[in-house]
Amino acid sequence: MNDKPKHGWIYTLIFSIVSIVYISPILMIFMNSFKKKAYINRMPFSLPDEKTFVGLENYVEGLRKTGFFSAFGYSLFITVASVAVILLCTSMCAWYISRVHTWYTKAIYMLCLISMVVPFQMVMYPLSKISDSMRLGNPVGIILIYLGFGAGLAVFMFTGFMRSVPIEVEEAAMIDGCNPLQTFFRVVLAMLKPTLVSVGILETMWIWNDYLLPSLVLDLRKYKTIPIAIQYLKGGYGSVDWGAMMAMLVLAIVPIILFYLACQKHIIKGVAAGAVKG
Image 1 (cartoon, rainbow, N blue to C red):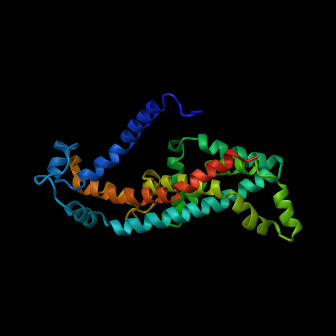
Image 2 (image 1 turned 60 degrees about the horizontal axis):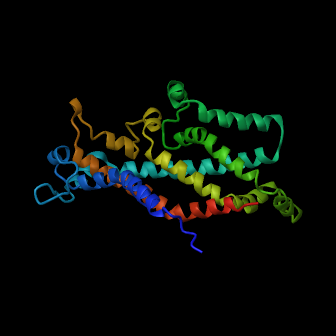
Image 3 (image 1 turned 180 degrees about the vertical axis):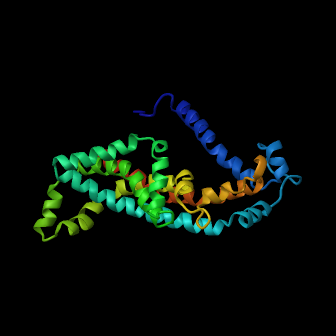
């Protein structure tokens, strides 16, 4: 008996075209990063040839102009620390919400949901004033701000998963002598691994590529993340060093692509585990 769909090749063709559409901008950036600046605007879709190819000149120029390694260090620290704090705090909050049923846990959960609805543009001005008054314009202070903005989605996802986990597993751990903290770190976190990976990837991609929040909060005279450093390649009167910008965009994209590819198998396992969970 043949279970293969009759028109499977059509779906393969459609999704192949969609994949090419999504990947093509990345390929264009990579391709143009090896061209002379004059030819990027004139021939953006053509491959580099002996006339347009400049080797690594754009990369060297971009590194010289942007202070890329310093920006990379700040971006890496802010991203890793923010994601770690978000995962730890929101998973503990979601565990408490899903296990303690009172009016204030419901209120906390609703506040987290409401935070996802409020547009960022509504809080931009008060956020910048408050962060300035509390001296949060540094790589450590911005972690607290990312925790506030990332908590809504993370708590929502963690709570949904925790409500499907039987409480008997935690009760068995407590009977064996675990206190609440030991139960959380030894039992609950292990069960949350699929959701931890999924939330971690979403938060990492958001924080690593974020431009607006660091530009509002950080003291840009001292601290620049990668998106902000790349923006400084835009000069006065609309002039842009497109060659250096394309090269720095490639260097900014590569780490997040490698991170996603490394975690992809864990996402698939998490989806499969959630699908058969009962």
